[in-house]
Length: 368
Image (tube, rainbow, N blue to C red; front, side):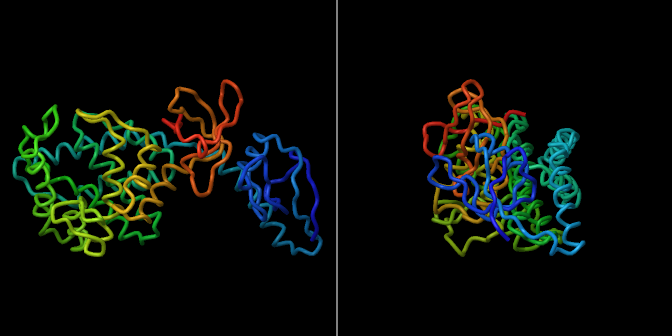
């Protein structure tokens, strides 16, 4: 085994870096021992790297099985890159789910019992589809609307909570339970006075006190269902509690709050803050993630926050984005510790800017 410099245009997928690659950056843009993928080549090209130090091994000492495995890995890397970015029927599936949820919500207002099996069947296909493509999470808020917000919010929280649970390596059965609980978390709003729900101005203190009761109503509505575990029923009741004791309905702290409610809480606050409301414009997904991670530190489960960041904020190389100053560009490098603030090559000038250093700028949205 020895080291050699290889021209970028001749660099093969699967080659292993012999040294860290530094290009006027504090940290390496690619680290030693990294196996080269198509995205790495795009990064190197963006930084105008001409030659790359790679490890050369004695291929004659490899077995036929090892050589075949290397070839297969290279083919898979290419094939995966060519897969469609977004499942074409996700939006139809989402809109169908919104309509189905709205019908169920109207029946709850009229006093009909919750059909939990039907709701689980509504949410799980969406969770599974969303996990096929991370871009779905970054534009999920754009599918939401002020009209019928509760339906949009409930569906989105179910999707996001299920995806966070999967990212945190929960087993399949528990992912279904968490996603369903996320969907059910706000069903108690059906029992809140419609005049308060539909109010087009800021809520009074009395209004907000009534809104806070929705977690109690939600629990009562599914309390007797055998299809949801008791710990997930507790999570529905507690999903507005915060680890620092600033939440409701009881102001619980730390380990007195169910870990499942902590997952739903992250999904709930993320979607609420990134959605347009009567009294507030929607905010950038990336800006909201930073606020949850930094400004609201101590309120939310950090593992769940990091899982959400990996789903939403960790953008692939070459992703095209709109920035907060109106400019556009593409991601050329992502920082390991700050994925929401990658390096961007501006479309108009070709200049590379580091959002980790330029804090006044942030990613506004992804360009589809």
